[in-house]
Image (tube, rainbow, N blue to C red; front, side, top):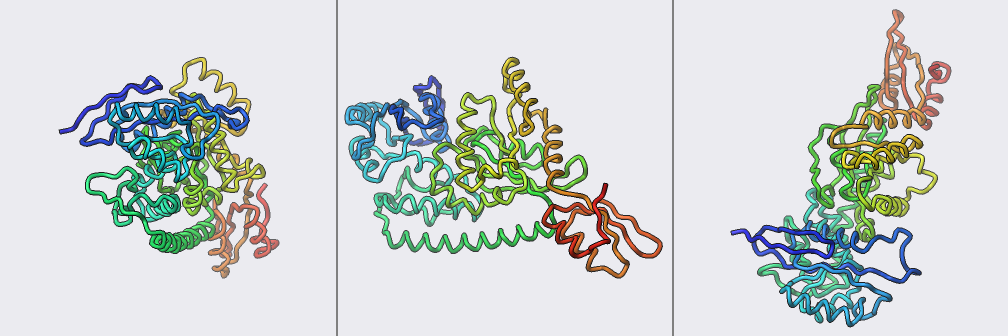
Length: 453
């Protein structure tokens, strides 16, 4: 029989969680108080706590208590001060919690010391995100990428089991469960597994490169969706392509990249790519492990940065996404490729909606829309068309009847828009090229090729 459990969070949220034998958890957000160390996008402590609760909910924890722990300076042994450690220990005992989620990055020593003090398992922010990713990954590539990130994280944490290496699905064993052994991981075995996964992922990268080169021969532009987790990327992807990618009010609902053809109003075909959501303080191990997937973003002709403008922290979330893009190599010189998609307009009150509409009208690089009801979608497609038109030119090329190879080359390297056959066997093609391919075509066809007026 399923149990129902309630808890009142520090953020004032009433939780009702159903499920058998759920792990009872306390969520602690550590708020750095030192202004010198605060980030430029310093967020309200309750908002950060609410995000941490959302992450914990994503792995079906029974959240029995939540709190904010102020911190002036990290302590080498426990990260937070001894007084707060003792206070949390009492609250953990009173709530009979089995797990404490600490919304901060802990060292292995700090994690072990806190587990001793609190007599409960401890999961830091990196471990929590890895656990979510472990449960969400469904393709072989996604599972390998998450496992690689997990093993790199766990190398220095030899107090966990590695029974997850034999699992077919589910998380990665941070929380544990009935019958799970707590054998100490052997560093040599972990390293051997890491090397094996890296080898398998290298094959994935080579396969992706082949697919990418194949797409270059059929030159459909790539448009990639990026954004903070739960910004509505998958809902927009489904709206544009009539796909059925999982789209829920859930953090990291999408892990494995999805690509679909999309025909623009002009008839031009593009490839639309949905990607994993970003989040503040995204573990570098995850960015490194998912680089093969995120290379689709690097190869994109246009990047759609999807933002939830109804969210109180939309500006801070935008900053976090831009930091990840910088780390991936999307620097200022490529920012002209980015279109900001201000999503969830349907959730704005009339005053906020009017303000956002006025802001969007003053900018050429953003669109206000609702991926749920479709308002603004036509404007987005028009903006994509205009951006792509700036990067390509249409040419008219006369092909002799005997030039079958030339005809095939044009179909492989360009986008053939129209053709006209003449009585003498010649064919005039209207072909769209990007700048690089246009140069190759000019060398190949010479005077038979001219830009269309």
